[in-house]
Image (tube, rainbow, N blue to C red):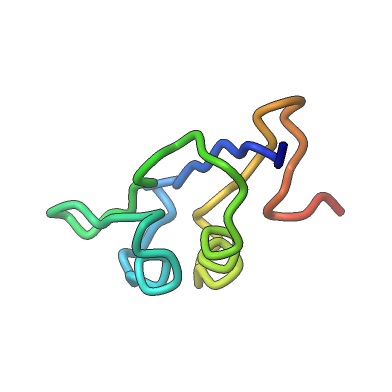
Length: 77
């Protein structure tokens, strides 16, 4: 069985670029104020969602493992 992730968008940081939706249209949506929201906050690991987090120009997306809470993105330094 693969990893399960918790995906979160810090809407205080989100600038509504839409890059997350471009990278992972099934993973994110923009609301009427152009703020990003994960489609499903708790989901199976997904390379497109990871690409969206990595491509966010303001790093508003965080991904952690559901089991244990370790950071997937941004990587721990």
